[in-house]
Length: 220
Length: 300
Image: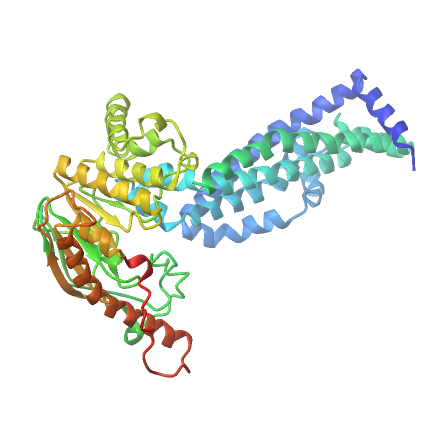
């Protein structure tokens, strides 16, 4: 194994190398676009599944199946459909991370405490108003849980996609290149950066968001 | 706006109860059909009339269908037999003329105190400036002016119930339904909120239907006390209390009334205890279940 000092020296070099930063920027941009699609589709479909039992009975299993499927397993299909390009990677992120958002959202919608619903109803919240002003906000903690997991799932899916679609410039492509040349310290340095980005976003964005929501919802 | 109950009964399917006394969704309740014989009768043939502006307490041991009566008047549940009339109209669903304050404040944690109090007005489609002005007025009325922008998790139990009361009163209901609203609070806070509630009731001239298992609470506040028996809940006694308010805890006349009510309530509590003992220990020897020095605990 390479010495930690060697690895961190390479991490430092990478972070000041414009070519590396361009690759990292490409990965992050792809992730941002993919995650945005995940949020929209995942929450949208989750709300529908949570609201309409019939839809849930028809498609709920698909959401769970989607959520159980490893993202890497989607890559070959994505390549067959979209070729070796950006779309394939976005497709992988979306399929890898949408399921967990759907499952979390629909479970949240369906597990709103009856007392919360009753409190709303006695104050005139029913039908569509009840859904948007009582049920959806009450389901927020579960939705946030789903979004947090989806970030991690999406980040993994991005890497799986980029590794297999090595023609797109990104950190996955760099791993691919470095692995071929068997430069283990360089490889580990890349992995450290990838893990660090995953942890940083989780800690700075999602852990905080979740803590805020937990404190507010669970101690109220 | 008199409330009239005519021979009202309510049955639930077995196991159809949650810990909070709320009926569970059918799926969770097991959903077995056709078990009428073993259904639980929560309340049985309850008839009563509550006049406009009255303060009525419904008193009884835990698990005797008190909450069910509140839910029936609120329109959150429908009776299996009998009729619930408010102002001569049968109750068909919840309405903002009959707002409920639950045992747990059941505030919306994602909204500030102001957001919670203006919620009903927002549902009614009132424009923001108007509803906020009205909400603030009621927030001040329950002495929470400084906390208008606080979130529920930042409030104590007593403050949360104050918000729940403001949230109900802001709708200008004719009837305020209260389901053991103070039973989770400490004694000092409870006494304070009882006084404040009486002031609000006198000031706003609303009808209050207040459920409690606490004899002192009922007798200090109510014009009339309906005592409900152990399940199936039936009205067992009706007491009219004409003592002027504010009533002193030490008033011998009040204490005499409390003694009478307690004596009657003891029997019902003994029944409940016996029932639950029988259910939990079917092999237990029969005989006097409640020891001589009965502990009435929170009922006093």
